[in-house]
Length: 52
Ligand SMILES: [Zn+2]
Image (tube, rainbow, N blue to C red; front, side):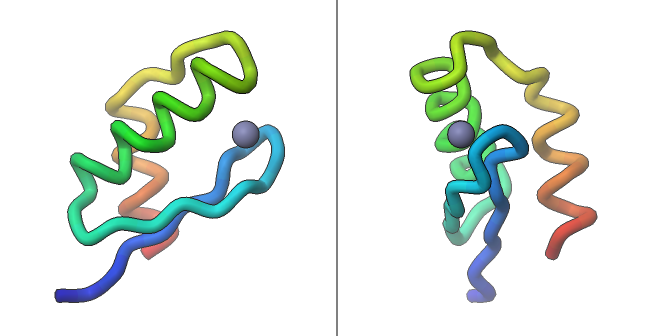
């Protein structure tokens, strides 16, 4: 299974995962914890598709 990856738009930390859903959860959790706001899930999923 292909590995998906995505960078945090704020700090450029890289995240990777095997599924778009779990990768989106990972990035949303990171942005909430580190940057104090929750990105919209559909926007995160759209970015995962564009970048992979
Ligand atoms: Zn970040």
